Every structure is written in structure tokens, then in C-alpha cells.
Image (cartoon, rainbow, N blue to C red; front, side, top):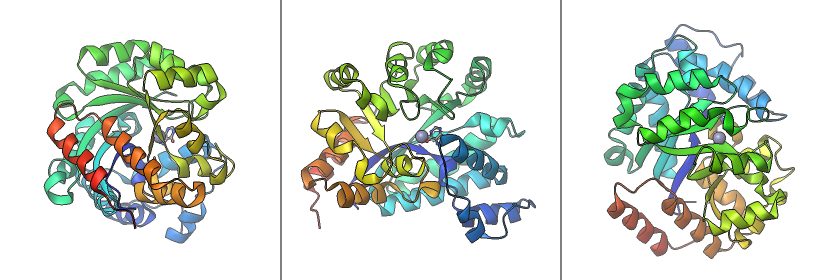
Length: 330
Ligand code: HPA
Ligand SMILES: [Zn+2]
């Protein structure tokens, strides 16, 4: 669906399509343990978040040079633009690369080669959000933030991702305080596989402005009431939830009930190369399977721009919001 939208929950490493993975492996003299792209696609059957993360981290080995990260981001931006994405706030996982011996600068400079001229080249404005891996230590997160200091002019905020259960937000209190002091915006994954308490903790201890996923808030009516009252944006990822078995089928997804409850929901793709669709595909899926009305779809698109970190360019936000209102559904 080409309805204008902002994508607020997108892991750039999760946009690595099998074709590009093989191309980069060849370019870098590496051999993937899969015969071809079909065999690799066969491996995209996940039991849960961890079984996905295992493949996600394994395939990243093909990303080695600035050019690799540039190509990865350019392919994503081109696909996103074709599906109506006008603004993208892009997550990246520095520790997944520095732990393999890459310099943080290789990752940031490489991504920036694509992001820097994305508005003129793809018609997509961008922001970059550095994510800490929550299954790594708090000290490693602090060291990552320290290493990122030379690149802060290119980084808008910090996030928290990877294996959730057993790694509550409070583990990262100190690094989030440091990030806030540096003027960085704060988001965190919470309530994807983890309990509703992690959502509360992300808000109260980490001071996050948006909750990534936040799906499990529906288990706690008091929390839902708070999220509605405080207008906390949730970056939902419906196709991801199906593939990682957070919901049984798309038809069971609580998005319609969440919208009816007054939650500020947005729809995003998470790791589109792995979960069967980009942002527009997620919109198509919730329209088709959940039967969302045009007004609900417009609300989701409006929310995405309202929840985006465009405070430094309110003129651009207003332009995007006008595009949402003017959009004619087909
Ligand atoms: O869906 C996700 N959840 C947590 N961590 C992640 N890292 C990439 N994708 C995800
Ligand atoms: Zn995610």
C-alpha cells in the first residue's frame, strides 16, 4: 500500500535479502552454509524470537565493508520508498558487528553513504537509532555508547533489542541516563516476548518515548489505560508477530482492539527480509486480514508521523501529515 507512512521499527540488518547475502558473501570471499537462495529461504521458519536471532546474527557475517552497509541501506530505502515509506527511523546493532572485529565507523559511515542523500535519491528522510543488545552486558552497552561519541551528529537516539526474556529494561538504566545526557532520544523493545512489566519499566526506568512492539500490554488493562492517557506510541509489527509466533495467526492479532482502546499504534516491518514483507505489505495484510477501515489505516499513517522524531523539522512533518490526509485509497 502506497499510503504515505513513517517506518519507526526497522532493523537495517533485518533487510538483508537472500540475494544480497549471497552477493556480499561472494564479494567478500565467504561461503554461506546454504547451497542457494532457495535453501536459505527454507531456513526462514522460526519457532520464536531466539530461533530467528540465531539466523539473523549468522547471516550478518557477510557485512564487512562500508560499501556492504551502503548497499544494504540503499536496497532497503528503494523498497521502502516503493511502498509509500516517506520517513524511516532505522535501527542498527553495533555490537553485532564490533564483536566480529568491525570498526563502529565502518558501520556508521557505510550506512550514512546511503542515508545522507536518501531524501533526494529515494524521497525518504531518515534518522538513525543505535540499539544495544540486551543479552550483552550493561558494561558492553556503555562501551558502545562511548565508542559512538564521534558519530553522534548522525545518531538521533538509542534503542534496545535482541533476546528479551531475562533481560529487563532496568539492566540498562545507566546507559539510558548517559544517552539522555547526550541529548539522544530513547526507545526500547518491550512486551514482544517479555511481560507487560517490562513495558512499565522501559517507561519509568529508561524514560523511553516510544515502545517497540509493546504488544503484551493488552494483558494489563491498567497499563493500557496509562499508555492511552500518556499517548505512548507503540511500534507494532504484525507480520513479525506471526512469523515469531507471538500471535497464532494474523487474524488473531489484537491491533483492531488496541486501536479501539485508543492506543497510539503504528505498523512497521521489523525485519522485512525475514518476516515476509515491507511496511506496505504489513499495511496490506492488516487491511486484508483484519479488515481495518480506510479511516483506521489513515490513523495508523498519521500516528507514524506524529510519533516520529521529526521535532527538528516540523515543516517536513506537516508536509507528510498533509500527504496522509490527501491520500485516496484504491
Ligand atoms: O524483533 C526483534 N526483536 C528483538 N530484537 C530484534 N533484533 C532484530 N529484530 C528483533
Ligand atoms: Zn524489532
